[in-house]
Image (cartoon, rainbow over all chains, first blue to last red; front, side, top):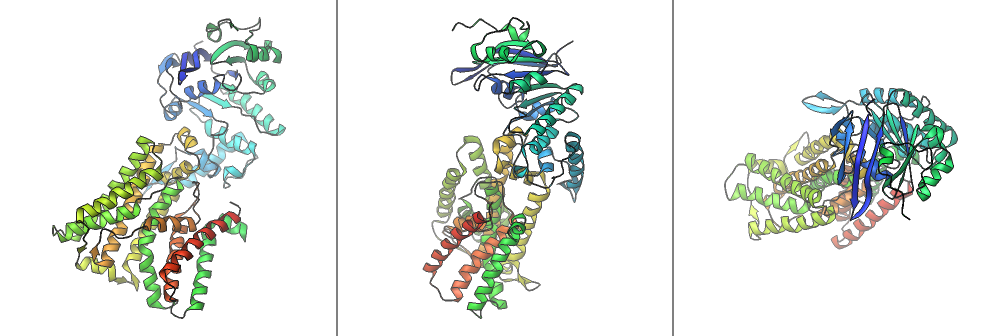
Length: 264
Length: 310
């Protein structure tokens, strides 16, 4: 089966320093791929490129085997790629409905002008957010005043719509309580069943192990290796992140292509 | 009550205005008279128009220091078109307003394309526009006499001066824009977090250019009211009026850190500024002291705003 998304030899330099060097990896539909690594390992840079927020210096992205140009977040949205940023997912001074429709407001014509269709937006946002979190009811409150879990519900509801094919979640359970973390976990599993491809970026290795199908470890802008979550332990992951040690059970494939045994 | 006014900031600022009105009418029997209130509405119009566009700019976490200079440039160009070239007001005034929009658009383009902070970009434009107004007129002011201008400057409709209708129209348009149009909602988003807005798919650059254009148009409209009231177009008019406009916006509760504010509160903020000057005039306080009072009021207003816990 052709992968939903293929990242091929992605390279990005910041002031002469390689933030990403020849990174390749792919994502199938209905698959959760965990991306782990230290801060500065390149996972955020990679995901920003996939979501259209950054342009690579070199490399290619294919969707269903077709090469695509991701030159803006808007283009990425059109292609069905949605990213939930940890800190930049929502605007604190707007309410849930306004956030849900930000940048893609529904309008209707009145006296020759386009006006926001507040009522229709409210109805649709309510349904979509309830679909994610049935207990959510504070639609008129600025999201800056909501709890972490409530905010995450709004952010996820915003990112998951009919056309979403690839979802990138940046630390989705950071700053959440146990119940809310569980809610997000259940949600990831449900989205997986809907055939979305999901990248899960995180530091909580237990969470990543539990939710992912495959796990890619990054270090110094490169992919260290890819493992099957079912056959890896937390120690395997730590070994990859910290010393670049690839466990025996590592998978071949795009993740491992760039793997050159570390010299240090 | 504090919570109640926090959810409706306009009520808070309205209460401040009414208390100030009560104090002034207690201090002087002339304050609450029809001629004085009419005068007050005329006085608030120019400041109100400058502050209207400024509100949108400040909500987006920008600032426009060039509004008073744009006003002066528009005023002399309108004046020149009428007195030197003999064009009718029906042509000269729209051209002047469009010029204001053009200068504002240049502000926006400079900010977006060069990345120069709005404070610096519009500070530069403040000098450029004022300088051009002086160059164009060689420092002298055009005398104007036109029935249209006299009607705008002196006329009334249903007992209220014409300029106040212009002000209300501009505020109504901006109110609808901010509250019922995607452009306006996105301005709040940009003011709160520009990067997040960009990632949400908002064309931030286009919004900014449009914002400064609107501010320039408001300055152009203010120029119409100004030359109508003065029956002349002096190039050195409205010096430092941009600071008063910014003060009116801040007194109205719009946050300098962006993302929060409404135009209706700004209108009341402009009323408060004007009432202070008007009241102190009636009470015979020297205009030197008035500046001191206005300064204190600005600091008090922002401090009270902080106390409300926002």
